Image (cartoon, rainbow, N blue to C red; front, side, top):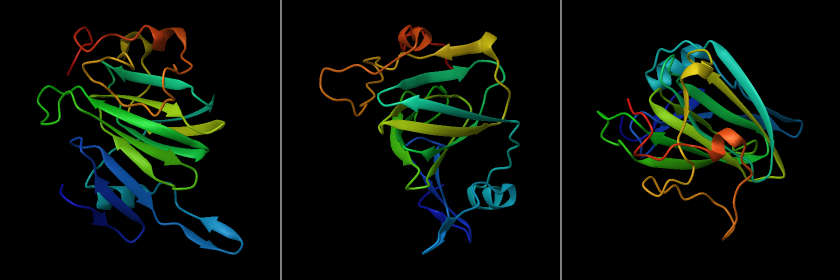
Length: 191
């Protein structure tokens, strides 16, 4: 898909990674506040050209400088539609699909409650985010169920991938044990 696709309720813009899309729902606002349809299956299908079924919604709360990722599943691979409803994050996807023209590449985008942008991350990519605001609430819809037995974590700081996280110089994000032990690019299974 080249360029962006305008639909009556959403705009879809391709990114530098094959299949990763920025979704911008139309926001209707006045002096009282605003309203948006955060998801409409028919509009998503029409504008993005994708017919996907979401089976699980996830909601996380994180504090500033928390980094969650870079996660993916080898079985029950998940496409994800992600958004932020409070605060801001730097959201990142890494292409692990060996047949993809963007294999081994990454892209990042700030998602926030203010910009209302969403990111479609297809199956076959590692995904993660860094919290930029004091706190953030992150929501995502998935096309398959969580399968902890096949979950893999790619190292957030692997030099081969070289993600440019917006961190202060010489600082490390807040990581859990699993994310601290992420696999190097060479050791991480691919698709």
